[in-house]
Length: 179
Image (tube, rainbow, N blue to C red):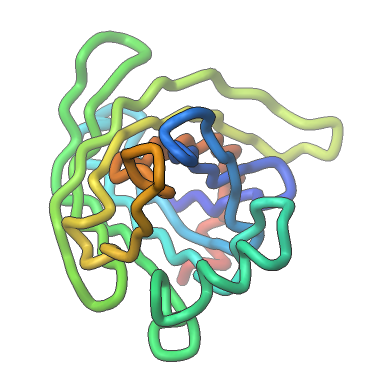
């Protein structure tokens, strides 16, 4: 069964150390994806996600412009980052490890997300939704995102490790729409 992202009830967020002191948090405003899921055999699920790099929002327009530049995402040349699943390992009734290939700036690296199934609900309008939370940590340098600036007091301006946090609400796609 195919499920689509309900993007008005979903988030793709990240956090990274700034000046080795605090974490800057941001999100991508524009993304979409589908999940093909057999609820009787969830380890056969496939996940595909596309995120628009220019939709980055850290609540600082100057920083967002820099993140869209060739120093980071180079959004004009690489408008999307993608994730395609390769394996689902069930941990227990509500938890799994979702492995796949994350592509940023035409560099593809494997990642694994810890995923929690948060439930199923039927809306007042008759649609059925599923909820999931996924988290992982990546090193941005593995994707060629190496720009940085040293600090006078030691350390660097931008941390290498990026925490990725995803909150997804999925909506069932009727078979007549997928045919």
